[in-house]
Structures are given as structure tokens and as C-alpha cells.
Length: 423
Ligand code: IMP
Image 1: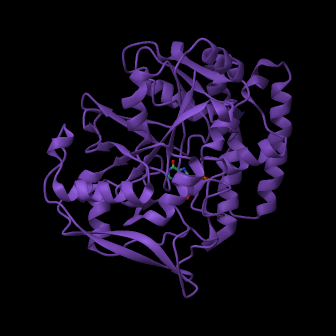
Image 2: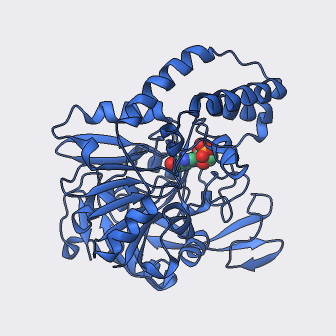
């Protein structure tokens, strides 16, 4: 049985959580494959808003198993908070939550290192969520990390101490002014580790292999977006994992040939939180309206998101790198009332017009070239059927489909599960 993938195509915050929640009824297993609590996946139904950071977005459906894959990094403290939040709702969520033994742990000192590294960079800082993501993946690739499976070993606390001591020396090396009480952070950490240990740890690649053999349906859930990919994103202003399709193979142990549909999620405009280049960023009333109406604040950090027009050059790149087979357009409702819409179709780059994403998209090298389109006035949020969509929106969608050469199968018209139009 094939595995489907669901990925964000921009700089994250496209609305992946909502779509996973909508699609979960079609799947037996939802498997998160990379990132960590830097993500904030927002789901809304029955008038309640839920924000998940590490737990897959299929958790609210009775029948789906939710798996945290080996490519994910887990902070036990945040994980425990997520579980505490879930305990307010009916049902035992822990029964359908499985954790890969090969997932790496975020230690309190990873978070401190993240903060020290950012502070040392001054103006050049990445704008990290400060959840310890970079330092944890560095320890993973440096072959120093502590994995979930280590918690089952007797000597894990010795391993922990050795790594934490090393981190403390590294924090001193940064020579930045940082106050912290490690003993207090560790008390929370060890308490949360005990909670984590009450969950089921599994050899997840074997579990997924057997699931495929017995014809189970699997949806792999990504976090962040393609332009934050460690290889293909706007480096160094990226996260530390492969957010693109290949990340699902390494983050779950799924073979490339087993992947069938690749669902690409994008917003009808563009946002970015944190530092880094953003060619179509707006500093005018259009950008301000997108931010206000779209409630564009980071679900993890609360930071305001930068807003801008849709960038087709970047979106085409993401479609190509991921091999997207179906697109899903989010937040079209936020653009209702705009007299005009602009879509960036090419860049002026070093005096030339180019239609591909170049190595460097810093503002001094790249000027976006736009196509202007008519906006729509209608409120989309109550619409339930494709026949109700205004003509100008249909033109916008049609134009994007033609340019991207991939069908747009879902148009989301609001944050709630029910505000989803299938085409
Ligand atoms: P880190 O992954 O926390 O180190 O952050 C690196 C960059 O990725 C920063 O610009 C963050 O704002 C951005 N980032 C990380 N996770 C997310 C996310 O889930 N949504 C949007 N941006 C993110």
C-alpha cells in the first residue's frame, strides 16, 4: 500500500494541521516525519482551537494511529504539556500515540545553546523559535545525540550528564550574557521524561513496513515549509531538517517508490516568520490587511508574521523539489475585499529576467516582477461548494493551476474543519 505525503510549500504556517485533520478520516496512520516543537499546527472544530507542536494532527480522530517518526526531535517538557492539554478532552489519546525509538531528544541545554547561538549572532540571527532545534539536529548528525530508545537503557542518565556538561562548556564559549538555572530546568525535564516513558516506543520503520504489507493507509505529515528546508531553503535562514518530500523517506524509513500522492499546501499569499529574504514582502496597507485579517501571528512564538504577495517563482520551485501531485490553497478568504491581487511570476536578477529561484534571493539581488489580477469582494467563509466561488477567485485559481501544472483540489475558506471546499 502506498504512502501519501503532506507538506508546506512556503515558509511554514500554510495550514498543514487543518488539512491533516480534514484528511485523517481517509487514513489508518498519521506519521510526522521531521521538525519538533518549533512547529505549531493549528486545528479548529466544534468552536475550539487546538495547537499541536509535536503530536501529529490526526490525534483527534478516533480510528487513526498517530506516530512520531525517527526524523522528529522531541522535547519531553513540551510533549508533556501537549498531553496535559489533550487530557481536557474525552478519550485516552496516549493509546493511539506511538513514538519512534530513533527520534532524538531535545535536552534543556539544547534550548540554552540555541539561545546562546542566536544571541552571539546579533543582527545576523536566524530568528529561531529557540526550541533547541538546531543544536539537537547538530548532535544528531554529529553522532552525539540521545534518542528515545536510550531511555530504555540503564546508563542513559550518564549519557545525559556527559552531553549536558559538554553543552555547558559550549554555552560558556559563546560568551553571551545568559542567566539560567539548569537544576530547575532539569527537574522539569526528568519529570517529563517519565511521562514520555509511559508511552509506547516502537521500531517505527518496521511498524510502517508491516502496516504497508497489511494494506494500511498512511499519511506522512511534514512540518515547516519547503523554503525552510536545510538543503533547499533560504539558507542559512532555515530550520535544521529536510522539510521537503525526501525528508519523509529518511524521517520514517519509507522507500521513495512507495510514495504516491504528494499534497502541497500553500497560502493564497505568502508569510514568513523570523529573519531571512522574502522578495514579495509588503510594507503597505495590503500587507497590513493580510496580517490583521489572516491573524498572522506565530502559533509557537506569537511573533507577527511578515506578509506579502504570492510568489510563483518560489512556489514552482517547491512543487518541483517535492514532486507535488495535488495542491491545496489556504486562506483565500483573507484576500476578500482586495481591489487587486499581485502574483510574482519572475525576478529581475542581476539585470536579467529569470523564472527560477536563484542561489541568492536577498533584496539587493532580486526584484519581483508581478502580474496583476482582479480581486473579489464576496465573503468566502460561509461557502461550502465550489459552485459558490466568485469568478475572480476561480480566475486566480485557474491561473495558478496553469502556471504550476498541478490541480488545486482543496480551497480552504476559514480555520474550521468545515470551512473546506473540495474541487
Ligand atoms: P528553528 O527551526 O526554531 O531553529 O527556526 C529557524 C527558522 O525557521 C526561523 O526563521 C523560524 O521562524 C522558522 N520556523 C521554524 N519552525 C517554523 C514553523 O513551524 N512555522 C514557520 N516558521 C518556522
